[in-house]
Length: 49
Length: 543
Image 1 (cartoon, rainbow over the protein chains, first blue to last red):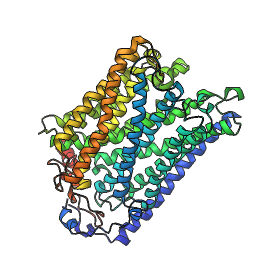
Image 2 (image 1 turned 90 degrees about the vertical axis):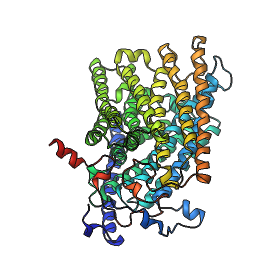
Image 3 (image 1 turned 135 degrees about the vertical axis):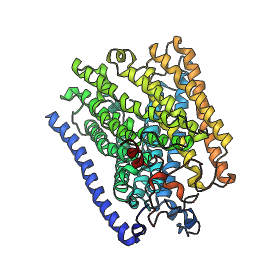
Image 4 (image 1 turned 30 degrees about the horizontal axis):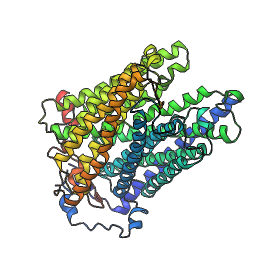
């Protein structure tokens, strides 16, 4: 069973902290996606030179 | 695991009251999940209608109903609609509904981006479908968009490519949200290896999406510039290489196949333990098998293009690497069977679809192994054998998985049970007609009938006729399923919080229908009440 002391988190506290962390995760993954897109386009450009 | 059903019965839902506020501006994961699922159903109907045109034309040899050019538009747009409009949004809808409930999160991590991810899709498909009404018609070069054929169209090329970009952006944002949610929003003590298999399979699927959707976007961007801006990425006349497009496309396309099947693996891994009333056998092996399949999906792409010409060493490598996928897939199939072994099984509709998934998806897997054999593939390539193979994977695999999931979680979503007899009728009708539809296509392919043709030799007439009968039977399942779910909403029996006797997991601890807001206080996690049992104890037993 979970520690009862951890069983309740205030919305603005724990959840807010988690959402901030999630935004950082999302930004990092989004940058990876953009990098892959750019890499494939650039590979096409340099391959065509 | 505390039962949250009671505390949520008295919740005030605080749903937005206006129609637009509720559905257009919603940031609620359940509403967005519903939107995705309704959208996917509409797309299944549109794509299904196109398959009806295809099978009507192919019902007998000769040109009967449609112009060959329109037939090619149907095959192309049918695939794009079913893949990007039907299967993928349906799985994202299921993810939206179930992942926060399964991990004890109050919502998705990025609710406004979640809304945006969905509302991009209707515009993408309006653009794609609008090309059917253009003078040039819709794209007709196949969903693989191989140049130079794909860019010989008119305005439809730009519309189709822009629509694909929008679908890709939607998928990437959805995947980002799912990863961010699973990694950051799990309830305390819900460790990664405590998560239900559906959530696990979606975490891995989301990483696949992040890795390959930008590759598709890059490929179609280069097509766009070849068509409209004078570049020659894929034009041999300008020094480019059309085969390079095939490599890039299938570097996206093969993982895409697993994007459409891994969430179904997760669904089946939820349903079988419930109706076998046993913990999932080999939970950790199942997780690692999904991860292995995802990894292998990146290194086998050229098995789609053996006949294009490549060095013998390359062909051998791609053949053996492809066959390797059978190992983790076999682990999964054997673990599902072992979960059922000596279980107290009952055969409600979700279980029937899940068992059919295991059997029929395996048939699709076996024909995939046949296609992986290089010398044999030279015979099978671009024949109806390939069409039979991928429809077994995608219809009796992915779509049966989606149908199983809808029946399984419907009581949780709506608070209503469906009519079990009608559900079972839906299953048996589907099981008969889907095999009538696709199994004869193996014979047609082995006999040499090419795919993407509106006319054929009379030698292929009989099996085509039978296949078309199967198609019309399968099309009937769309209104049938709609009727079953509609009548459930109107007069279905009230569902309990734990709607299935053997169901385990956090989603079954909240009331049915699930309240508008759930898990605003985190649940207690009791590993023994998760679908895979207490893995710590199991490890201890053998340790």
